[in-house]
Length: 332
Ligand code: 2RA
Image (cartoon, rainbow, N blue to C red; front, side, top):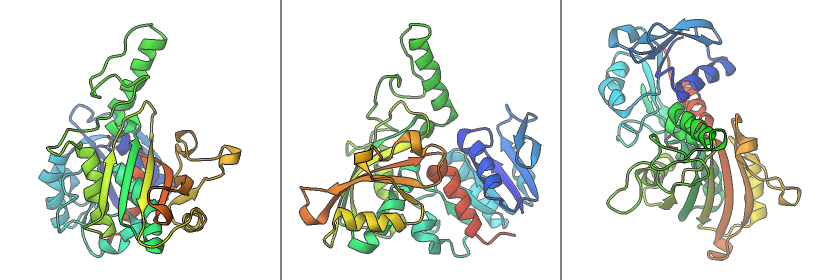
């Protein structure tokens, strides 16, 4: 397969190349595209050194698969045209996720939606991590309401976000200065920021609304009630999510544990007596979303459950999910 990664120098782009290698994706030719600034530089890949090219539709012609880790504007300009030429496209941006003719896919939940589509949208990281755990619970107990509070890593804002966290933490600890910010709304070191993306007229941020909009589409539950509070915290690459659900049928922590222990894409880490629960420390670099702290929710009684998730934002939240989609698409 001739595979192109567009946005190859970014945090998700680099991870896409690694994931393709780790999963032994049948790559016969790998093309890496980035902005003009990076064109001509070389990147090490599992298939040897590759020279970065500036993207142009002509340069992408002949690809079997294009993995897009670039802006929504880029996706709007090029994704449909590439797909029309026969290139299978997986787009990481939010631009096309809610378009009726573009499936939004987390393979553990709705792989069937891929069909023969040539253009598939990859969900927001917070959504992907959430629905991997929600779907098996929905199948067993039904789902009425979801309330989620997130603890999102700097990687959600890309390589620049991770660099800003590192530099500004050094500024405080090494230089004894005040932390600054340009990527995040406020300095991130030693802080938590209850704003990710812009505020919407309803008082929620766009990140929070994406969790609601996208979860409904992926799970095929257009009326699912979802409320999210999304918070940036000073970690590098795992998003944590404190989740409360109201189910349609009675649920117990034991039954939920049994369901999640068998769920694809989920690793049950739930032994609080031995200090075992999901954490960025343990979920970093892992394909599976860790689920734990499972307990009955007293507000919703026998229909309520609380739990905590940690998923690697760059893997299940981005690159891994994109490659899992590509593995199920009809290529060539
Ligand atoms: C974030 N989910 O964490 C968003 C973008 N990937 O910033």
